[in-house]
Length: 367
Ligand SMILES: *Cc1c(COP(=O)(O)O)cnc(C)c1O
Image (tube, rainbow, N blue to C red; front, side, top):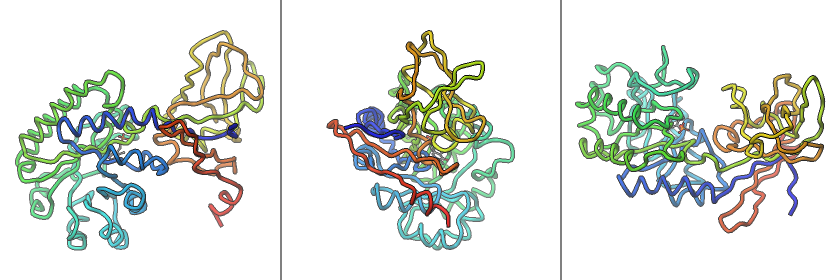
């Protein structure tokens, strides 16, 4: 079958590699993992993912509902700011509701009596390469800072969430921060039933010391007799998808520029936000150098500059890797560009086109 570009291609076999590590951690040290839907919510592969994970965690009521309807198992709901309506919706479907502040907790805890209730804490330490994504940045609104106010509401909560990492592949800094948290929050942790350590831990990266990581987690959970949750987003789906495109034209302005039938702004937005270059596995070097650019009218719609072993031409296929996390969730209709279809390569090799988009989807996106 010849697929029409552009399309996102999720490969379940590659996904499975990550999921097996998640399950290993669960088996080895008891830490449960809930998928962070804000990173990845392509529910066409949830049937596979839910065999290896314990549920989902949401940053909004819609995400919570998606987790409830399409993933099942545990539904954790967090929001930086709940409205009264939000709480009504979330209270019906969530197992765990996590508040961002003491004031929101006090306002709403009595409306979510059937749920486990938690608070997000800002431990004022973090690991992130980007200020934009640093939860402990100056003036951060993410989580409770004041320990005194926290100790006054302990009777209302059974757990807390610390999300303090972003793409952390260094076990040493994680361990150091966990020790710091242990020391700083000892009296609080002793009184809780569960703690979520958030996401941002890159434990599915090649050569990550998974066993050591498990031992660290186990030491922590044993000490306080706690259920640990992890909230992996990126590490659950990393390296499992590609954005497949076709070269439409090659133009020259001092250098050769290949224009593909997709766009950074519309289809891989994080590249622009974090000023990074898309990854192309085939471009490992070679004589032929091209800038690969998108077809939106944004001047800086550039995937990157690469060397290829052979000349590109109109019709050449360009596959951008790592197109799952923070990519598909952010796609948008800028410029009215054709939206990449969503294709899944199942474990048995079968190719499923799970979603195609057409003009009507663009039109109905606004009114
Ligand atoms: C973003 C986020 C996650 C997932 O982070 P990843 O870096 O994708 O693992 C988990 N928990 C919370 C609270 C988050 O904000």
